[in-house]
Image (cartoon, rainbow, N blue to C red; front, side, top):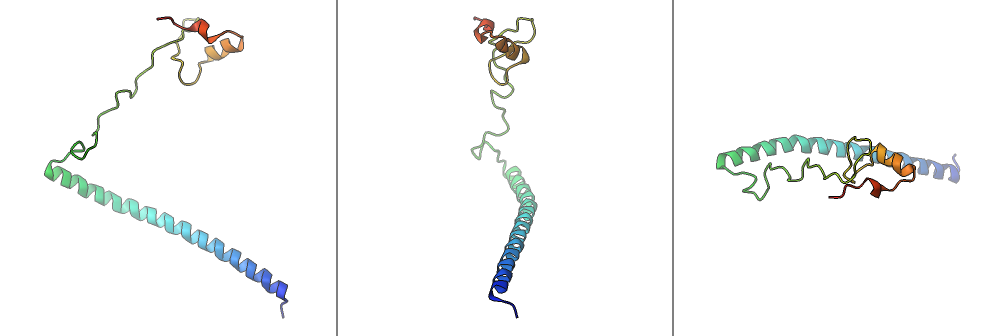
Length: 117
């Protein structure tokens, strides 16, 4: 016959095993639910598009902006710093170009490369 301690160890192990099984089942259910959602979503979207087409409704009618592009999409910033070697300049935004990094490492100030307009 098993001792009390042996039985407690078995209970602890069963709880741990049950938690693992529940976690795996939960993960699988979430995965199945997301797959079902995607499956149903495509049908719903198709129905909505058909109804919009049938009634002549656009995204603008629904309060959306439609497919218009942002006014700043792809816009380049104004160059504020000139490369002394005559290469491309830099807007001062985003990652510093290699020539700026090298100049700063040599102790030069960024203001030396500023384009005064």
